[in-house]
Image 1 (cartoon, rainbow, N blue to C red):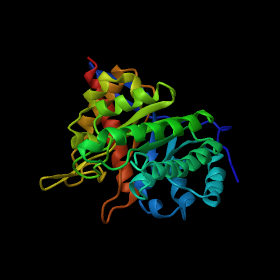
Image 2: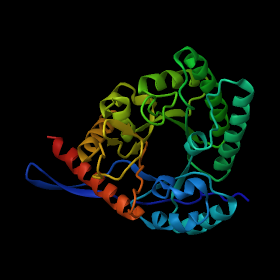
Image 3: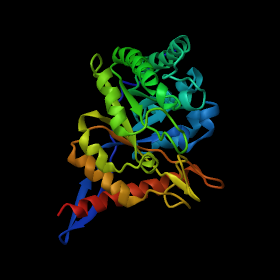
Image 4: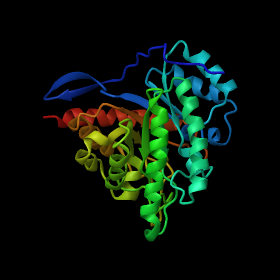
Length: 320
C-alpha cells in the first residue's frame, strides 16, 4: 500500500519582530523548519506503534513544514497521510537509526556484507520515494583503524552512489550526515572537510547528494558554523540541537536547550543563521532535540522554538 503526499501544499509562517536602529521590523524566517520525530519521541526508534498519534501535534503545528521520520509501517503511514490531508507537510526519511541502532553499515569492509546492507537501505529508499518524500538521509558506519580508513571510505562512496541512483528516480536528494569520530558515536565520517571529499567522488556520477551538518555535533568535531562558509555548494540540510558535556566528556545526546551540560545556545544558533544567510543556503533547518528524564516532549520542543526565534532576532539586530 503506497500513499503519496506530493499532491498537497503546505503554507507555514514564522515571523519575528525585532528592533533595528530604533525601528521595529517584522521579518519572516527564510528557511523551512523541520523536526526529527524519533528524537522528540525516542520510543519511535524501537517501534512505529502510535506514530500517527504522536506526529499529529506536529502536523497541526504551522511552525513546521518538514517532518523527518524513521521506519513507519504501512498501517501507521496510512493514518499519517489521512491526518496530513489538511496540512500538506513534507516528509523525509532518516536512515541514521538503521545505521546507528541496527548496525546496517554502508561503509562495511566485507564486500558481501556491504552489498546486503545496501539492499536493506535501498528498500527503504524505494518506500520513501513511492510515498512522495523529498529526501533520505544516512550516515557512515563506525570508525575503523587508520590503516583501514581509506578502504572504508571507498566502501561508503560505493554505497552512497547506489542509494543516490535509486533516490534520483523519485526526485529525492540524499543527505549524508557527519558525526563525531572520537567522543560518543565514533563514526567513520567526521569532519566537514572529510565529508566533502566523499561527496565530491559521489558527484562525479550523481548530483543529488549533499551534506547534513548538525550544530550539536560541532563541539564534538571542534567545528563552528563558520566551517560551512568554505563549502556552500555541499550543504543540503541542517540540524539544530545541543551537544552535552558531563564531567570532561562530550556526548551526542541532543538534550533540550538550557539543560544541565547543554553546550549550544541561541548565540550559536544566531551564528549559524548568519553563516547560512551569507552562503545563500536554500535548504531547511530541523530541530533535533530529545527529552531527558522527567521531561515531556513538548517542553523540549517549545524551548527549542523560543531559542530559534531569539536567535533570529539576534541575527537581525546584528545586520547593522
